[in-house]
Image (cartoon, rainbow, N blue to C red; front, side):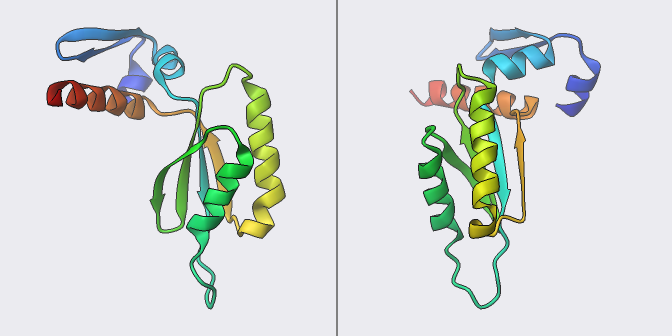
Length: 134
């Protein structure tokens, strides 16, 4: 997918033989991507209980945006932020809260990004699986 994004001017994605989207990589990501993603890296401190998941769950509730925990692996938490018409105001709110809670949650690093073209493609692939199971 990275090569397609770097080299192609226009892309098309088919699901069950039907054309689902056509456009530039940026257009496809912005139109079919689901909002932004917030990645938090929270290392486990020695001698402390592992309550990282509970802290992230509380953080999601404080955000009050309808964010969901998409992935969790060895101290890496990926939150899916919903698409919003308010745009950058939501990102500002998210980043402000992350900075405010950084010390309390022991956040080592964080990043906000758009979904990748590969993630958009995988979303269409899941849609195809759902259609086939019905």
